[in-house]
Image 1 (cartoon, rainbow, N blue to C red):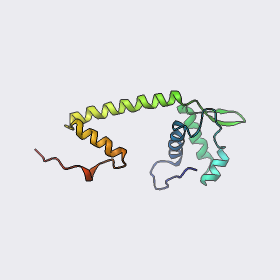
Image 2 (image 1 turned 30 degrees about the horizontal axis):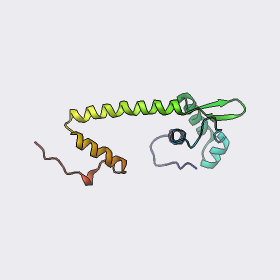
Image 3 (image 1 turned 135 degrees about the vertical axis):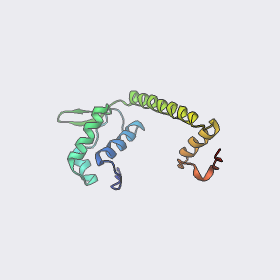
Image 4 (image 1 turned 30 degrees about the vertical axis):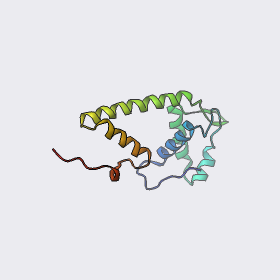
Length: 134
């Protein structure tokens, strides 16, 4: 079951899109597997069915799911989606590395930042010493 964060400033449908996208990309939902119906997911999450319909519409627009009239919503084969997401991630990483170089972050510092982020400490603040100002 999905947990929604009602303190999150993003609309609920965006949270649903994000969570379902993650489940699809991780293979929790397999290709051609039927997603919960709009009505049942709305009941499970105690939200308006229109919110679920909007999330499903966005997922379909992004290519994660497809709908079959009268049958429901199904997961597309995610292999191409995973490749697309990895390519997008690599572009973002390349951009971040370039930006890091521009502001003087060394390769070891950047590596430490990535490692700390993976460990759940995105800033890595307590493990990093402040650099003296020049």
